[in-house]
Image (cartoon, rainbow, N blue to C red):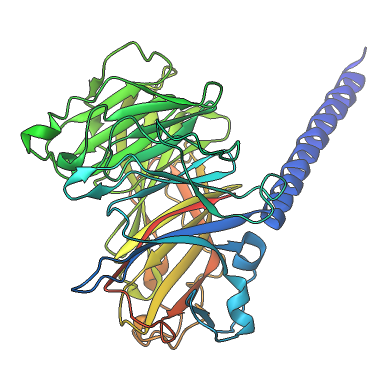
Length: 443
């Protein structure tokens, strides 16, 4: 074969390879578009309506379709409370799913197991509770989603197949995560409300909770509280850090081993809720997203092939538009490099604003210099731009542009917009003394 023939053959091979890569990219984009069209973001909140006579707590789930969330418009959105009789077409974007209320424990947590949202644990009369409520979101399993309480050890009442039994030990603010088809539950704050076992796993095959080794955080009975917790999952490892403990880890792939201690170079785990994301075609880098004041912090985690953490380094900061100050927040991975941060501000009792901030990121570890990017060069315009929480900003605040703190890697963000929803409590017989965004999930 002559030189010209070999050249043409190489060109054809490159063209075939490029076409295959483009077809794979189109297929990924089609899958992502279908996901965004059919899935919803579930918002889980806690509301306290207690008065001097009675304790009345409410744990509530609402949802918004991802297609509606990403279809931004200039129409202000007001969401009326669940007890409201006010009809407003815009409020249909956010749908009431279900809630439980009454004399419930404080410090309950939400988690996801398959298509189920799990509400569990809590603290009542200074003791951890074992209670579990399950809401099935799959309409083929439960056409009318509603909370059902999990059976206790002595209960023989018939429950749906998707019910989950109560914990063996009471857990305050449990961290719940699904890994390889099993649900893990690890106690949280306040630690002194919890009971042994503080760490358990639920196997859907035999439908029982099994105790796992307790993390070396002390004895809850000793009344020595290690402080607030941060949890994260990296590969098969659960990480936990308290104010008074080192960075601990438990390898779910080897549950017979005890808890270990990590000493990563540079920075440790962020001091609050962290979303850890795997990077496509990159096993040795992960991204951590967290919120501190009105900045979204992005950290780069470098790990070994065995998921051993080598270092956690600051990578970028993304400023929240309008300096929105959150009393509580959560975040969710929408897939395709799209992240949604949900920020809640208790504010006035009549209206409580919630900011949905959505953006798409890209990351490269081979760039020689920082990369700055924005879809428009300016921050998104929130649909409630005249909100008092916007600080009179017209939507052109250049501080939205993040800055990259690393000089050897490229991280870019494309804003997909933000939206402020104001929760109207005017129809409630009483306003919440306190409200908190506990979690959000994509299902």
